[in-house]
Structures are given as C-alpha cells and as structure tokens.
Image 1 (tube, one colour):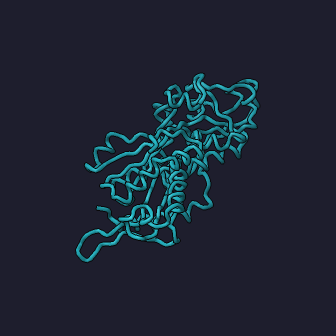
Image 2 (tube, rainbow, N blue to C red):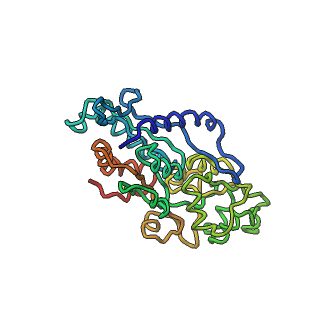
Image 3 (cartoon, rainbow, N blue to C red):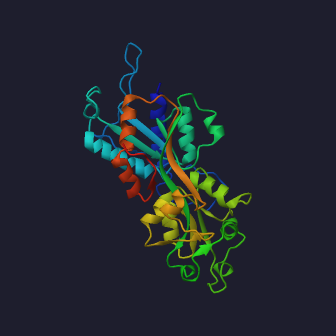
Amino acid sequence: MKVTMKKLTALLFSLMLVMSFVLSGCSADSGKKEDSTEAPQSTDAAGNEEDGKKAEDGKDEFQSQILFCGSSSLAPIMASIGSSFTDEYVTWDKVDPSFPAENISVYVAPGGSGVGVNSALEGSCDFGMVARTVKDEEKAKMSKDYKEYVMAADALTVSVNKENPVCKVIDDMSTDMIRRIFAGEVTNWKDVDASLPDQEIAVYIRDLSGGAYEVFQKSVMGESEITASATQCPSMGALGEAIAGNKWGIGYASYGVYNQNKDKLQAMKVDGTEPSEETIIGGKYSIQRPLLFITNSEVSPAEQAFIDYVYSKAGADAVAANGYISTMDIK
C-alpha cells in the first residue's frame, strides 16, 4: 500500500529545501554531509497536483501521480521520460482504457542516491533513483516487494578543464596519481608534470549523499580520505559546470555530463584506459556504476505501465540524449 501522505510530505519538504540551494552552487566543505535535494520536476498534464485518495469503503482509489526521488544523475533522464509519457497520453485512460480519465503526474525530486534508497525504504516516494549498486545491507531492510530496475551504465570520468595545459602534456593518469590528487597529497599542477605551471589544483566532488562519492571512494580512494579542501557540488550537473568554470579544476564528472560538455571538458585515461561505451560495457574502465531505480512496494498497474514505457524506445532515447549507455531490453 502506498503511503500517500508521506509522499506529499516529502514533496513539500523538497520544495522548501530547494530555496536554500538555488543560489548555493558548490560548497567548499567536504567534511560535512550536505542534502542536495533540488526542486521536484513535475510533469502533471494539467499543471495540478494530484494524489491517490482512500475511498469510503477503505480501499485505495487509483493513484494518478508517481514520485521518483534520489540520484541527480538519473533525475534528468527520468524527468525527460516522464515529460514524454505525459505529453503522449495526457490522461491515464489513454494509457489503458481500464484506468480512469485522470491527469498523469510524474514528479522527479533529485537528492542523491542515499536519499533514493531511504525514500524507497520509508515509502515516502514510489521509486528511489540510485546511481550505484544497492548495498546488501540496504536490501536486507527492504520488504518482500523490493525490486530494482537497471536502466543504464555510467562511468566517472576524471575530467579537467579543456583549457588546462595538462591536456597537451598528458592524457593518462594512474589510479594512484588520481588518489593522491583527490587526497590532497598532490596540490599543484607542476607536481603532476614538471612542465606544467605553478598553479594550485582545484578539486571538485559530489556531496557525500551522492552515489558518485561512494563509487569514487571505493574505486579510487580506498582507505584514503578526500581532501577537506575539495569543493562539494549538489548535483552531477553542477560538478561538471564547476570544472568547466575553472581552468585549474579536476573532478569526477559522470560519463553523461562529460558527453554533454566535451567542448569544455577533457577526460583522462585511467591506467591507460579511456572511458568509452566499449570499455565501460566491457568492464575494462574501472570507475563505473549502474543507473537504476528501486521500489519497496507492490507495483501498481499504472506504475507498471510507466515502467513499460521506460523500457521502450522512448526510454532508451532519453538515456542516450543524456549521454549515458542504455542497458535496457527494449520492449
């Protein structure tokens, strides 16, 4: 059973939180956990907020809205699919004649993979968006109705500003050099290569609630901690913009963000392997992750109809348009 009041509360809470982040950009304190929740993106066909209601006989009426919370990497993809679905059908009866003629509403609220997992667990959203593997200890807390839906493959590219002279000197970094830079052991570009200028390295990372932070920590950092001087960014898009805006910056931009900003960013090879569709799918590129969404509740017929749409050409096209690699079996 969907807890509609919880979902409504989560939606309103997200709307309030966004006010504190609209002008914040990236934060320079990596020692504190940040909530990166942004305003939910709504694809309500009529611009109205709707929610499931309980009938007088105690049974749940049709739920016309679907709420996704979590990963900021997956959010633009899901928002695009939701918008396409809403534009195509407008009302639920056009999706399936057995559904009522109620306006379709798909809400997408970014906030990080941790938020996605917790929201699904608590029932405060229908689906949690996650940009990493769901941990065994997280799955252990879920109900028998837990399901996950993998949509795409992603990688974290070690990207620099394209105007950085390093691009003309080296195109490959070892995992150890990357670790040393992000740990603050190497802080100047001249220490990366003697021919480079005496310029301080600006390190950009996702905030600690993001799936990218955990993936990078596991794949690159190991027991080392990221330097406290690293600048945290509330979304993957903001991280890409931060690197693009600083000639001496470096960060782990997602494959999708990198593909959308190739005119501004340059991705380094890692241990001799460049991030590409072939090396990511084949597992050769080491810093990679899945993009998926999960639920901890029984999937309703309307939700299943939307999931079927996600796993259609429209969904695969949205994944590709955002620069990621679809791993879905298209229906």
